[in-house]
Image 1 (cartoon, rainbow, N blue to C red):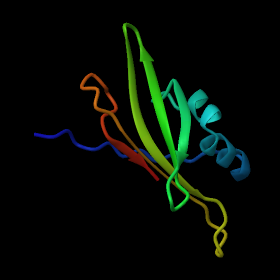
Image 2 (image 1 turned 90 degrees about the horizontal axis):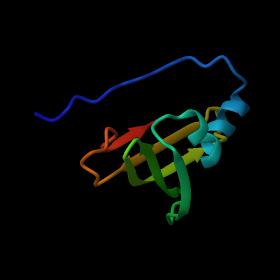
Image 3 (image 1 turned 60 degrees about the vertical axis):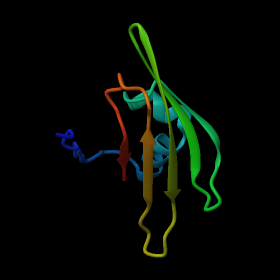
Length: 101
């Protein structure tokens, strides 16, 4: 049986511009998101999404994977959206395939 997805939602008591900066900058994102030890941009897709490579260093092993991130900062109604998808072929990865919105 495949594992059940995990859904996490939280309220962040911070300025929206600061949260946006911390989630959209790959170096800053890896400082607070424990799923990633490093995130390195590798290019963009034709629709403007940012491709990246990530690593998660755990004792005795270095996991690696790839992903794509699309952030839309300004919409007509004032909302912002950020979507992230990542994957790995490493069978030891606790992350597997994932996404965030």
